[in-house]
Image 1 (tube, one colour):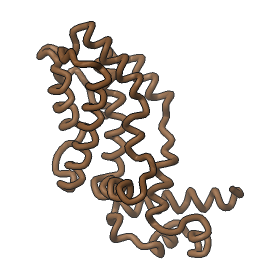
Image 2 (tube, helix red, strand yellow):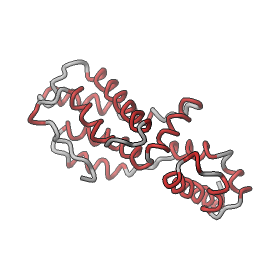
Image 3 (spheres, helix red, strand yellow):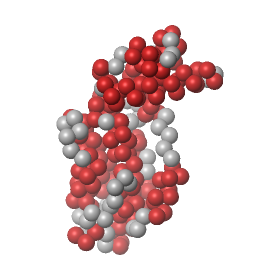
Length: 200
């Protein structure tokens, strides 16, 4: 990809994300995006076939600051906090995108699977080890196989995100997911609410 094409791609993606958040995915046209990005339509169509491709591009190219994630994991008080930090990283992406754009991602994933839900499964091995540690330390009283707990945890996170989108963001997604995970894990009362939101 040439420097010019790369610059146009960044401009288009940034403009699209800004407009999607403000006006909603369905209310934004390619012309709106081109105007906001200051890019000719011909340049847009040389990079993307349409709005859907921008969204899929964003999902494929999410660049998280893993250094910051690892620093947070090291600073966490216990493995229960570490589990929540990992889940919260993904839920924060949904919150940042907003319910309409996140809902669009769900819809696009059903039409043309592009690995959206793979994000949730990316750290399965870590989750299994952390849950096993928590079971041994008495932080999680659910004694089912850690692999099964992880699978249910991912499904809870996806289900919570879906309901949040469907309701138009009518509830606090991260808080709801936290409460559901604490129930799944059977966290002892003294450790409930031990998780801290990153921005709290």
